[in-house]
Amino acid sequence: MSLIRIQGARELHGTVQVGGSKNAALAILSGVVLATEPVVLRKVPNVRDVQIKTKLLEDLGARVHREGDTLTIDCSDLKRRDPDPELVRAIRTSFYLLGPLMARLGSAKLPQPGGCKIGARPVDFHVRGLKLLGAEIEYSAGYYSARADRLKAGEIYLDFPSAGATQHLMASAVLADGQTVIKNAAMEPEVVALADFLNRMGARVEGAGTSTITVTGVTSLKGCEFSIPSDRLQAGTLLLAGVATCGDVTVEGILPEYQGALLSKLKEAGAHVDVGHDWIRARGNPFLQAVSIKTMPYPGFSTDLQQPMAAVLTCAHGVSTVEETIYESRIGHVDELNRMGAKIRLEGRTCVITGVDHLQGTVVEASDLRAGAALVIAGLSARGETIVKNVQHIDRGYENFEETLRQLGASIERIPSDELETAQWSD
Image (cartoon, rainbow, N blue to C red; front, side, top):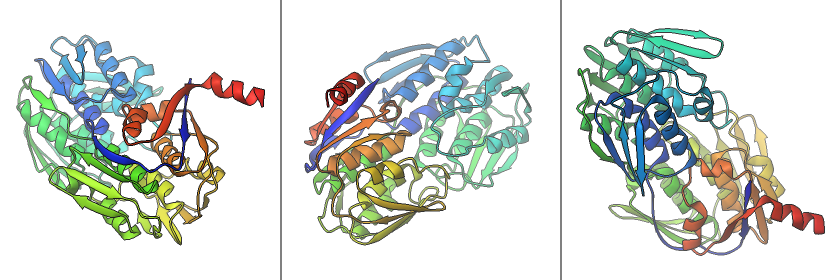
């Protein structure tokens, strides 16, 4: 097990390229099983969740080859409909294979999915939607068994615009008989990316990026080549790190319109923000002001950037509030930031943050992916040395995280856990 060691209080400066979107890649890797020909995916991030998803595909019988950031996947000869349950339980998006596998092979069996422990994330919307498409689904002993000779088109209304349910049902409907309508659909850029990928394979998906998506079923899908869009959450994290250290960071290869809520709040807090066609520049301000944030489905403020933003606000002047409306347990960063000198109290799902003069480095533990990113940001801005434990969570979604931050001037490195234990023993 390794740790991240940070020498803080150093401004970040420079320009970095943003890698491919983890969330888009994971959704697309569920869609590849629909094709009977090889698919070539470019700009695929080599993060832990993607590695697990490709192992899942191989377990199903797919042939997968990676060269650099390019994956070639051939699902023409799938042999299993019930992938290794340990792999399925390792990541939540494994469940998005249930519908596409059933659509392609007629049946599928998967256990309850896993992922970060950030609150209840039921699959009710997924199951209800698949049943509206004619699937027979049974749940027994922790497993979902789904069957359909061919899915039938239906009208689906999502009680909540879940990105995962929208992607799952959209991919499942492309081989259904007739025209499916998904209402109150999620509008995230990653939904648009999946629709673009499916259409590249010959699907007929319209309306992605709006609240109503129409899918006209086809009988088969062909192979294609497709580039994964840039990761807006990685971009947001790097911009927040620049602002937290009072630095000057530019991220390239990202569309500013996908960052509207974040950029608005950064400007409101007093950061300096400039945008171009495919780049964003954020400059810090030693006199950042408190702001109020409420996470919402896209285009609202992303739940995935709530924790990193909270790390920035720990040193803003005044009292900030950060209300989490999506995942009730996404609070794993609070106690750890307080260990660094932050003043955060919880009121239900809301973090009330009273700004302090500075944070002080110490040993902290990441409880999930975005909490880990928040602690790294805090460590970059804090005085002294910060050690972040449980960095395997960070590896789930950030590729070459330390290397990218070093390009911006951060003093950050990965060390073996026994190095910290040895130092503590000698003390």
